[in-house]
Each structure stands twice: as C-alpha cells, then as structure tokens.
Amino acid sequence: MPELSQRVGRFTDSVIRRMTRIADSCGAINLSQGFPDFDPPREMLEALGRVAFEGPHQYAVTYGAPEFREALVKKHERFSGLRYDAETETVVTCGGTEAMMCAMMAVCNPGDKAVVFSPFYENYAADAILSGAEPLYVPLVPPDFHIDTEALRAAFAQKPKAIVICNPSNPCGKVFTQEELMMIAGLCEAHDCFAITDEVYEHIVFEPYRHVYFAALPGMRQRTLTAGSLSKTYSVTGWRLGYLLGPAEAIEAARKVHDFLTVGAAAPLQEAALAGLALGDDYYEGLRALYTDRREYFLHGLDAIGLKHNEPQGSYFVLADISDILLRPAFSGMDDLGFCEWLAREAGVAAVPGSSFFREGGGQYIRLHFAREEATLKEALKRLARLNDGTV
Ligand code: GLN
Picture 1 (spheres, rainbow, N blue to C red):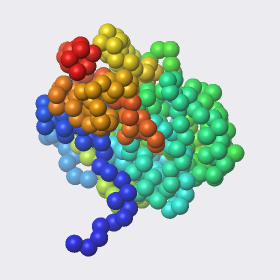
Picture 2 (cartoon, rainbow, N blue to C red; picture 1 turned 60 degrees about the horizontal axis):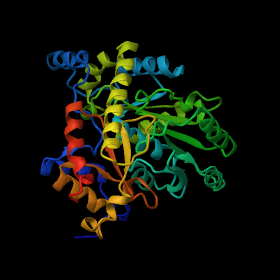
Picture 3 (cartoon, helix red, strand yellow; picture 1 turned 180 degrees about the vertical axis):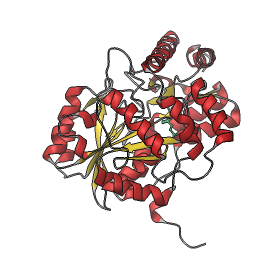
Picture 4 (cartoon, protein in one colour; picture 1 turned 180 degrees about the horizontal axis):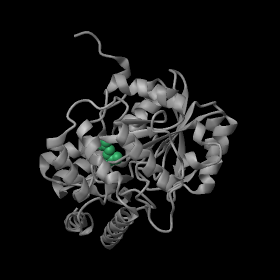
C-alpha cells in the first residue's frame, strides 16, 4: 500500500472515545466520555416524533436551517447579551467538535501558532494539526488550575494567530474569572490574535461561579469565534448539533470549510431542536440544579472512599488523583492508561487517563464525569471503593 498521509500519522484516535469502546466491551459503568444517561427535554422528544412524519428529511441550508439559526441567535442573546446576525454570523455544524475544527481551519495557515491551555480537551491538538497550526501550550496550574501568566505572555510574544479557550474547562472544570478573561482579551488586542472559544458547558456552572462570554468583553466580539453546542445543554450528544458564532468575514470562511466537510447538520434534528431552544429560563435553572446535585453526590462519594480530587466549578468532569494508588505493588509499572484499562475491566468503571489532556504529565489523574443518574453514580462509587478497601 502507498504511504498514508503524514498529517494523520501525527495524532492518535481519541482516547476518550476509545475508553467508551472499552467500557462497552466489558460492561463497565462509563464515566469516561462525557454524555448523560438521562433523557432530553420532553418537548424535544415530542417534536422529534412529529418531525418523523412532517419532515424535513432532505438537506437543510448548508450553514443551518434559517429558523434554527434565528432561534439559536435569539437564545444566545438571552444569555450573553450579544446579538448575532443569523444570516451572516452563524454556521450550524455537526456538534461543537466540527465547530472548533471549522474555526481553526478558517483562521490558521500552516505554520501559524495557536495558544492552547494545558490541560486541554484532546480534540484541540488534532484541530491544530489538521489546520497546520503549531500549538503553544500554556499551563493551567493545579490544584486550582490558575493561568501561568508568565507562560501566557511568553506564548503571546510568539505572535500566535489564535488562542483556544475552553470555558468552563474540560477536563478540569475551571470557570475562568472575568479578570482572567480580561487579561487574555488584553493580550488578544495587543497581539492582534483571534480567540476561538469552546463554551459548550456554558449552562453547567456551579454557585458561586458565573459564566462570562468571551465575545461579550469590550472589543472581543470582532475577534472571537464562539463554538457552542446543544449536546450538553439539552442532553442530546448523539444529535450532533453545534454552531459557531462570530464576525461575518470569519464565519464566511468557516462556512466554506463546513460546506465541503459535512454539507450540513441533520435537517430533522435541527427542526426538532427548535423546541429546546424555545424553553424558558426555568429549564436552564433546572439543569444547573440537577448537575449541582450530581456534583455534590459524586464528590462526597469520592471523599468517602478517600479518592483525592479537584473541585470543579463548571462542566461535569472531575480529576481524581491516583498517584498514591499507582505506587502500590498491584499497579507496579502501570501508567494511567494501563490503570484505566484495569479499572474498566477489573473494577467495572471507565475513566479517561489524565495524560491524554496534558501537554506533559497528567498521569497522576484520571478524569471521571458525573452526568449520570444518581443510582448509576452510587454503583460506580461502590465499585471505586475497591481502590481503597485494602484489596488492591
Ligand atoms: N466532550 C466530551 C468529553 O470530553 C465528549 C465529546 C465527544 O466525544 N465528542 O468526554
């Protein structure tokens, strides 16, 4: 066979999604890939049933059905205060994943640099490679994951084309403060740099933290591409509905990438999702309350079994520290990847090895998520308790 593309040789498949396959193959409780095990809002399910018979079943406009785009920008304005033009300033994509890829491809030339915080959601490394950009990693320093300001300034001194900001952050659950975002905004302004933001967890933020939309900061709307998604907000990760909002010129570029990559997101699902976008404020309060409960339940459970962890401020992920466990004879020579395989196959809980989120290191962590029914979390905690009951 002739040689395959070198570009594709530079990254592996997603470890997160690989862990889901391992979980499925051995029947482990899947706390690796982040998606809920509860139903989307009833309104959306009823709409989906109606759409089955009433359509549409053919292509929507490549960059999103007009009604869906209108509803999206309205809903976004409700929370961010920013008004985007549905006709020119948004593109509907196959999930936030495609939105991020389109954004990177739209702004980066091969050889450009892109600032990425570490730990980071693993897609960004592949996004950078496929768009030809070289990532400049800037540490978020545990345990509170504050920005290494010196490293950030040094990265900006290298004239990056874009900075990727995942807020609330996957995997560390950090919610960037207004001050931190203002500091980043100042650097973007000073160095004429784009911001590409992944804000798919915008509605999963715990008290007293608040989500600040980066594009809403002074001067940032014109240099920010905001990726959003319906996946987490409406518990429809399989519907693959995401979007990008930004200035018309950049969106026009992103639309070209999107058009030739996927043509469009599923037309019937855009139609059915209108029912979600029309939900009132009580829905979002309910979602926050639900995840606040799950977070409390799960973190207390981890405390009870003596598994050290960070304190997520947003998103539904938590990093558990396994460094002490890896020192035990039973795990001798095992890294975090091996440990996660063991955990899935032997203890029946799937997690993501921490090293897949860090530029360097991260092997002392595993990422778990709590987007699960309480009974499922209870069983998962029971199984995780085996780590500290003296048997391994
Ligand atoms: N964001 C989710 C996670 O980190 C999964 C997203 C995906 O697999 N597309 O687990």
